[in-house]
Amino acid sequence: MGAEVGVAGVAVPPAGKRRRVVAAKPTAAAAGGKRPRRARRPTGVQRLFQACRAVFRGPGTVPAPAEVDLLRAILDRMRPEDVGLSPDMAFFRARDVAQPNPTITHTTIYKSEKFSMVILFLPQNAVIPLHNHPGMTVFSKLLLGSMHIKSYDWADPDLAESGVSSPDDRLRLAELVVDDDFTAPCDTSVLYPTAGGNMHRFRAIAPCAILDILGPPYSIEEDRDCTYYTDVPYSEHRGKLQFSSQKCNLDTTWTCEQEGRRLAWLKEVDMPRDLKMCSVRYGGPQVSER
Image (cartoon, rainbow, N blue to C red; front, side, top):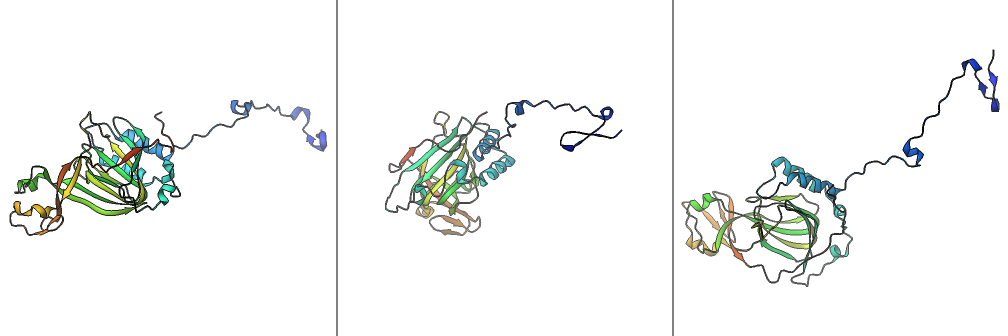
């Protein structure tokens, strides 16, 4: 028996060979007229926050080398837009060279007992004086602008035991680690409790923004207050220092040909009176603790 002809001339199989078609049940999403949501990718600052929460374990701890590499890699990929900044903002286009001590602004993205995430805004010519980070590991990422960094670590005990003594109880011997200009984008710098340039000074060559991760953050209650220093040229006290038979070059810092080191004296001082800092509310992408 041939096939019947149905509506619009479409051939219909004989009754004995017809298949039963069962309508599929609509899904909950289709019934509501909505498509399933795709999981959102975390923002750059959220990924950074999650990594910090996994890496920093609180006072008295230092991230392992692999953890340092992880955080450094994330920070190296951070862009100004990740924290709501743009080079087109008026702040970064300003070039007011006449102001001698411009105000430095900072904003806090997140802070806990284990770590903090802050951004520093330095107008042109602004200076953050030489200061320390006691018991802290600090990651600094220059997001915009350019600046000069000068940093020191305390000279190791071997030098003190070799006959180096301070001519003044208020002076302490330190080794120069960094003395150079940096322009964004550039690699993330890392300092440790006793290495990497724990005491540093920033000077803005052009308006700049620096993303700082401090683990743990400053705390007066936990004896992690900020101490300021001034660096004294090593040559000013060279007559009162004795070294064995090393040949030395005396400059603003002392360079020993045998050791290949540059040394200077650091003197603890009060917070400079002309240092002006203010805090503003963070307005970039937020982080979630969930």
